[in-house]
Each structure stands twice: as structure tokens, then as C-alpha cells.
Amino acid sequence: MRYNHLLLACLLALAIAPGTWLRTEIPLEEPSFVEAIATVEVGKAQAGPLVLEHAWEITGSGPLFGGFSALLSLPDDQFVAGSDAGAKLVFTRPDRRGTLPRLTRFGGDDDPDKNAVDLESLTRDPETGWIWGGYEWDQAIRRFDPDYVPRGKVRPRAMADWGSNSGAEALIRLPDGNFLVIEEGSFNDDTVHHQALLFAGDPFESRPPELLFVNVPEDYRPVDMTQLDDHRIAVLLRGFEFDLPPRFSTAIAVMDIADIAPGATVDLHLVAELGEDFPADNYEGMAVTRDAGKTYLWLMSDDNFMQYQRTLLLKLLWQTREKARE
Image 1 (cartoon, one colour):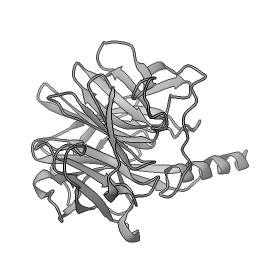
Image 2: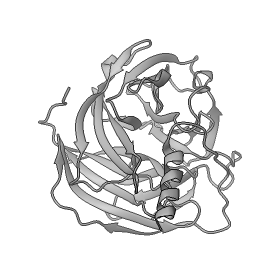
Image 3: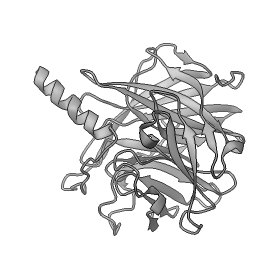
Image 4: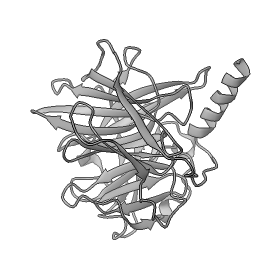
């Protein structure tokens, strides 16, 4: 039994650690579907400005279920999650009533790019509904129309040397229409210095991106980001400790939109580290919703297709009176 645990731990470490990791097309002989979105009983928990209000576990089966690494808020109380299998899960936020979850390939069964797996990040233009996804394996950005039909793929030369398992983990469309993507892996073995690219508009239509750097709190890596308000971006951070079983830590930081510029070095300001009172897992997806004047962060975990991990969804109230901790 101990050998099996060690083997699983080693596989997980390979799956999430920077470096080369084999990705292949996901076979679809079996149907994939969501079985349940069930409430997880949790106690009171608060970290910095974040208060845990609710938690759910999503269960399902089939080759497309699991590995959810990106989360995006949609109109009409909907979410879409992207996965390491190149799948999309469209579902109604579980604190609302709505349609049943739908689990399919992100680009549909007719997607010409059958090897489009390892989807790690998502962003959206709220005016047009178009969506962009960052793919880590081949360091690409794909574009989809509001019906999730693929409308192009670009592999920026500036991303070519990013690690095949530590690349375009965080992608965002900024309020001015520019795009920012941050490499998960650190630069030149510097544990806090990460490369980032700034595209002047849609990556498919702009000139080559400009390089900048993002300083990430020590012991963490950036795994997702989303616009928090008119001035700040929230960044989801993950830490990993090799153990039996492996242990994950989660933190939230913010960056000032005004600091983002070609050649700049942007500091992330840590605002919360989720401690033992929060359900622990490998959180890689984050989205923001606003209800009745309140701001909520939603976190989704990536189970790495491992039996001892879960697909969790957390709803966290952001109390605006709190200030970021330098």
C-alpha cells in the first residue's frame, strides 16, 4: 500500500512540476459526464479579506472529467471550466438554479486540432463573448467564438522556450483590450522572477508581444488570474510540497493594472494564504462574480486525474475593507 502511495505521489509530482511531461490526445471511447455537484460541509474560515461562504465537490466519470485548470465566469450565472484533457465543463453556479452541466471537448467534436490538450487558462471579451485559452503543452493561445467554435491558434515565438509543463498558466484580457500571459515557471531558476508577455490587443492580430517580469511571492507559482476591479488583477498562487500524500498550499495576490507595461517588473502583493480551515487541494482555476454590490472569488481545484484528489469549488467573499499585505 505504501508503495502505491509513493508511486501516485511521484506521478503527481511529475504532472505538476516544471519540465517535460508527455501529453497525448484523450481517447473518447467512454462517455463523459458530471454525476453530482454536492455541498461540502465546512466550518468558518477567513484569510485576509477572504471569507469562505460555501464549498461543493463535483464528481463525474469518463475520460474528459477531471483535471480542471481554468475557470471563467459567464453571463446568466454560468461558469465554464477548461481542463488538462482539453475539455470544457459548462455549468450553472451551484448557488443558483439553472441548466444541467455539459462536459465536451472545448472546441467540440469537430475540432480540427485533436491534440489540443493541457488547457490551463481562459479569458473572455465581455462585449463580444469571444474566449481565448492558453495551452501549456505546445505553448499556444487559441481563440473561440461565443459558441466555442475554434477561430485560430497562435504559437508566439516568445513563448517557445517556456516549459512544456510550466508555461501559459495565467492569461487575461485587460480592460484596455491588451492581453497579459504569465509563465508558471520561474526565470533562470530565480524562484520569484517570472516572465510575462504583453500583447497590444488580440494575440492573433497584434505585433509580437513585449516582455516584462512578474515577481511572485516565494514558494508559490501563478496558476490563474482574473480582473478583480477597475484597478487590480487577482492572481491565484499555488505551492506544492512533496509528501505522502503530496500537499498543496493556496494563496491570493493582487497586481496593479497601472504597473503593467513593456519592460516593467511588476510586484504581486500577497493578500491571503488559505490555511487549514479551508478545504485543501490543488486549486488552479479562479473567477470573479459580483452580487448585490459584493465581490466573490470562486476557486476550482484540479484533481490531476488522481483518485485521492477532488474537484472542489469554493465561494469566497472578498471583504473590500481589508487591504493588501505588502
